[in-house]
Length: 193
Image 1: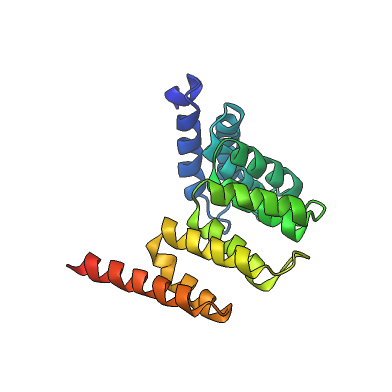
Image 2: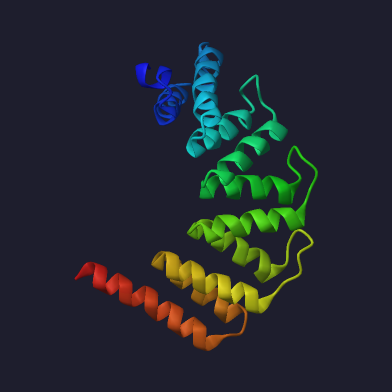
């Protein structure tokens, strides 16, 4: 608490996260704990700590919390994205794509999701690849873009290589499919040696 009072924004976020982790929506003290957590993570966010903004977004999107507000959660997630949080970009992008609490903005959502992927988020790159694979949110399917993103996802996290290989088969690129599946198998084999 002293560190948070001394404007160590990371400490505010950490303390808020701990308090929120203790909050159970079934318990009578849920609102008190959640308000305390909110105040702490909001302080961290206001001080420029990206994870604090991410947690602020999480709290504001918790339907059990009296401050539930999807429009404000979007703003917190977007600020978190601006501060370098890959998950913050992802959460903001999904709200833009779905129109969850804000007007739907598929083009803006795709740009925000791309920022998340560029930040090295494998889950986020996979989400982007799947959108281009099937064509969603009014975004047309794009086989080449999808394959490129599946490849990137595999390069970031070898655990996604098998998924990338399966997608390549579905998209008709059997050569890439074989390469991706062997990459995953080889990495699993080396991990066990």
